[in-house]
Length: 335
Image (cartoon, rainbow, N blue to C red; front, side):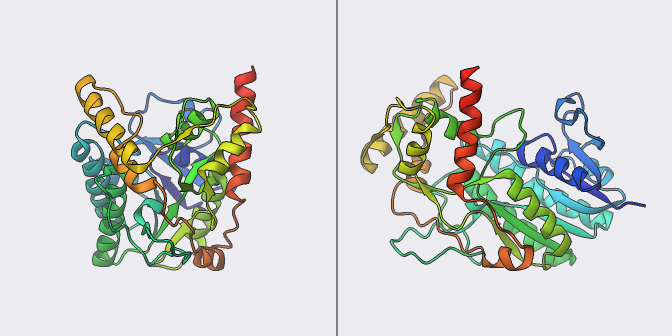
């Protein structure tokens, strides 16, 4: 009898691509979602789709019945909310507590917990020392998503130790590509550059990575990752905002170059936009926390030695992944 793998958040970008990759490898997959009526992400896929909500522990226990490997993917992924504690932090942190306790009750053999490079140190220095898996976020600058990823992963490790659960965590970079029905904030951000909607150059670095490289890394982590280890699934070398714009211009030659502003100018603009967003119930173009987190002087060079050694992780370069993504988006624009 085949062992069952449960993928939570299976209708999301990473979760759905993971389900597809597991099925390609002839794995028996159970996919959990909060809305069973949303069948489109699973059309043509031979997997069991079940209901589970991270805030409903009983539903998690049912979904985990008979499961060998849990891929804990489900999480709130957004940077802005009128009530960030209620909409972002609580679901991610309390949801983690619920799924870990449910995994203990269900006697799951192995847990692959999805965190993010957002949970790692930002190393805001001019040092070129690479950031490795031993580091943790020092200051979220009030960004609820960054805060929630660090807090929820720490919660997962505390409970894994308390209950002696066999867990590894994976920390992906900015995922693009693969199959998707709904774009993530990451993809929408890159789209806004390609479409000329992004008028501001953050003067920053990012680590785009093909989601298929991430799913390969996750499956390798499940199969041969060392218990208690964090694995960075990102590119070692980042791409700069100028590199991203140059890449976009390959497909949109007349692209208007986003303007560069000082940090002080961006902070003033972010304050105004956040105030307007709260008044109008809209989402601001930029956040004060994003300016603090992304603007200049941040080292996003990652040390992925552990992932290479244990998981044979060898992702395509960030610029290559981004070029493939921009090409795909630009083809859609020309239709």
